[in-house]
Image (cartoon, rainbow, N blue to C red; front, side, top):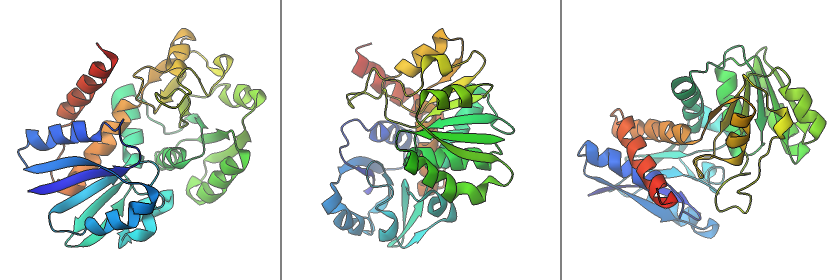
Length: 287
């Protein structure tokens, strides 16, 4: 028996075991995908166990995506640029780190919203690991401009400074989280992305939205990478304002599909993954 798993803490809300196991079973690969809840003080020990011949690899989620980087034998250039790893492959006892969030972010935009970031103006809420992966993804997709707005302005500034070498002609800047920042940055923008936890189930911020309603304009696409709940306050508000919306489930599935291919060498059965994830979310909602 071979094993995969997701490393994080806590893991009670992770959908990865649900849709990854569905995909593995669909292709009869004989691999079991498990939740491996790991506190910070147990991370080094957990990484050591990944070298066992029965372990194919792992996903990594909050709060370990950055802390796990120095514990691996090799990290690919993209993951090093982002500063975070979400996928580990066990290659004969050597642990290789990748970041598939970057691929998943734009794949969702293109496939599920019909949106090509090339030449577009974007505003990103947040300056953590998810925002960093999103900005890298959008820069690689040749967005024309990206404004990063964050509650802690110094974090937004740091993100912009560190990723400036990737801009290559794109305008990349940070703004403090103020009402005037939102209204000025979103005027005429094509895409607004939420990479914060505001609005997410289980955070105490379920009813919150990081973007003021009056900063959302008809014709824009509002992309909330949160997938619990299925429709966030931000998404509902955006619809009321005449904007298009995209939730976080497609990004989750596409990054998972990219991980699946790294582990197995096989194309992931994406529709099987979507169906398993949607069924689980509906069950939670009592639908």
